[in-house]
Amino acid sequence: MKKNAVFLLAFLIVSASMVWAGGQNDGGSKTVVKVASADNTYGLSTDPDLQDAVTKLIESKTNVTISPIIPPLASYSDKLATLVNSGDIPDVFSVSQAMTRIPQMVAREQLLDLTDYIAKSPVLSQMDPSLFNDLKIDGKIYFIPYNFPKAKALYIRQDLMDQYGVKLSHTPTTEEFSREMKKFAGKGIVPFCFPKWVDNFQYFYNSFGAWGGIYKKNGTFVDGFQTSEMRQALAYLRQLYVDGILNQEFLTTENTAMREKTYTAQAASDIDYVTNYINYVQNTKAANKPTDMFLIYKIVGPNGYGGSLNEATQTAWVVSSRTKDPAAAVKVIETIVMDPEVYQAFYGIGLEGYHYTLDQNKQIVPTSKAANSGYKYTFNYLSDSIVSYDVTKLSFALDQAMQDGVKRQVTEIRAMQPNLGPNYSADVPVGISLTYDRVAPSIKSTRESIAAKIIVGSVSVDAGMAEYENFWKSIEGPRILQELNSAK
View (cartoon, rainbow, N blue to C red):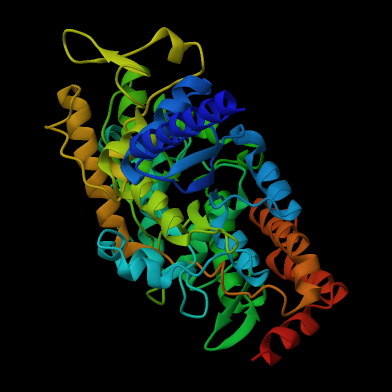
């Protein structure tokens, strides 16, 4: 018995020392934070070991244990919905289509109000306040963006502008745009290549003060599609189509095909994200059609309206209202978004020694492990990130063309900010009009279908608007507006 007691005492002493040592190594008991993000992050590799290397970097910066959930990008939204609806909601997760989904999640009390946490953070409180404007809900902030608002501009090949004498400013009028773009028509090239995503026409709606959807105008909810401003906008787009400026097959044009036509000079222009400037420089060169690109930030309509296509906050980080340690959760987001080393590893190039090595010229060379897992590094983070990077002081080398391209892209992104068009996507509250919540997808698809028919001439503006009015009545549209406007 005495021998057993001595053995038990020795075991307890050893066990206690192991726990103490473990606590010392880990900095004490660490908080565990579940983090969900698609696999186009975490170092842009699907290899678990490489993803784990990025996780460990975040842990070393935050003193938090990360429990990562990294579904494929294609199934991320479905996976997240399953987790949220099952109650197994992650502490921290990224949300795509944020302008629509975050208000819905706030209405369901699924997200933590981050207003005070941001204000008290020495790092997050220094972010440009305008980054939060488009998605505040009752004056409160429930998200943290990780890059500048997504905006689209018109890209025009400078070489073709010079060849055909096209002269435009970065903010031309609707009349000037039509007149100058006609110079490309009949020259064997597409003057303006547009993709099949009809919601991109909001860029032109902005020129007439129109909005494609329900929004709050002068304090009252209205259906923006049934306005005189929208009629003007659609009539203008129809004329661009008639004049041969707008590509005649836009209804079937994919984004990749649109870009390829511009890269190869089969098209003079298209519409794309301002953050894609570098891609145009690289791809026009790769196609043996190198050129600079001229960007049009907005087209000013007859009454002075105009603004770029503002997709505002597309993807953002949020915190679950059920998290047990909000401060730790916010610390994780703060580190991913604002720490230059982590942001670079998470969104851009991964980690040296894991995802890539550097050759004798300090060029990035993917490791075999990374290359076999779909890794494809990107330099877009150098310009898109809220964090500022000095491209002349990186651990790897950029050729002069890429350095110039990054600087130019930063310039274009900054230049776009004062020219952003409106975004009312978060205007309509969830749960106020159950009628609207039920039919919102069909409203969007119907107005886009009718807009497309008007532009290609399948129906006249009057006939198209009459068709929409009948649809509006069939879904109890007047009741929707009444319910929204009667809510306090």
